[in-house]
Length: 200
Image 1: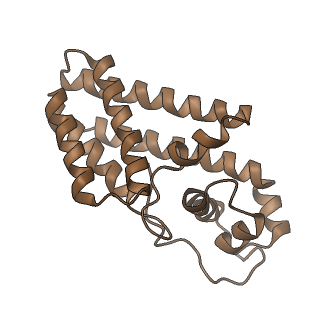
Image 2 (image 1 turned 60 degrees about the horizontal axis):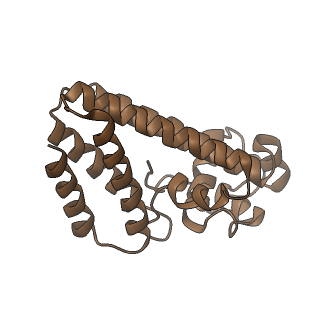
């Protein structure tokens, strides 16, 4: 699940400023990876995105790969919090699926330079082919996503929560690809509504 880059630091003097917030810096780095992908994002790009000098960036997070893995871990944690927030509501199956997918669409349509989809789905799927740690992180994310969606559907009264969870997760991943490809909000929302109607 993604977010708006509105409060990402821009144009700051480089160094490690007083009051340095690692979460804000990691958010900025995550957004740059989400927009450009791992391979196309250089250390200079991360320096520019975070406003930190190279030594400060290394001291806070490590090298580029370590920053990327931290960004994937951040996506995992944010997704967990999103699922927890939805779980606190008492929703029927159709409303639950609609809310999950509409929330997802809002995140996917944000980005530094336009709709950027999901960091894990859009970038880790490429890097996982050659990097075992990225592959492990992606597998962990997808397993958590499947499990949490199934739990939500079970609580909502789905008659086949495991199968429905796989459908919803697959639609979530498709929405990420379509958002990055420039699909308009109306088209993405129609897919979400169709999925909810099919499952309900």
